Image 1 (tube, rainbow over the protein chains, first blue to last red):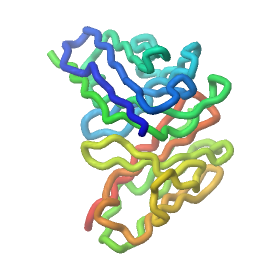
Image 2 (cartoon, rainbow over the protein chains, first blue to last red):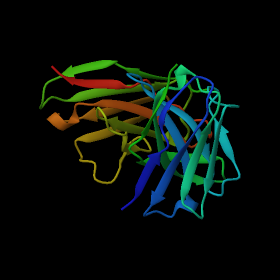
Image 3 (cartoon, rainbow over the protein chains, first blue to last red):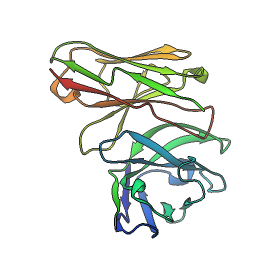
Length: 123
Length: 109
């Protein structure tokens, strides 16, 4: 059984930082690309970032580029999202998800998702 | 940048009816690499369809994906109470920069 479990969410003030984690079990973590996707309250899904299976390539949505950093530790089967300079617009549920990948550039559909962790940015 | 337009925004249906959801892309979706996801309130999205028409593991055959190029359709036959949810489309495979459609909510009439 494949499981992804996010953690690290919480309430922070504007301008602060937060690091999310996504622990994987039951899968060959190091062979999959991994994504972060978020959903603001009452809104749709927004793709944020993806990292290649070896961790050497990462790609970001314009909305978070320069502020968020995706990384992974294959030895710990854990994905991370470092979020800096947070604003109220970053308030959302954050999901991690896996996908097949090739050439560290092409990523397929997301077939396993975590349940999400909630981030609230408010003064 | 691909822009996805899902229509309608909301579909009011009765159990047992057929629902037809549309996803239109501003660019040709390479190799018809388009996925559909279902999301229920308070839950994570779930993969339904990939490659436009292939059902994911455990998805009943009441869910049918079709289309090619820039126009794709998700059809749900014989709606069941558990099918009332929001559905998103997403192209993949031609760029690492992904995007989702705005979603279609299927609600009980």
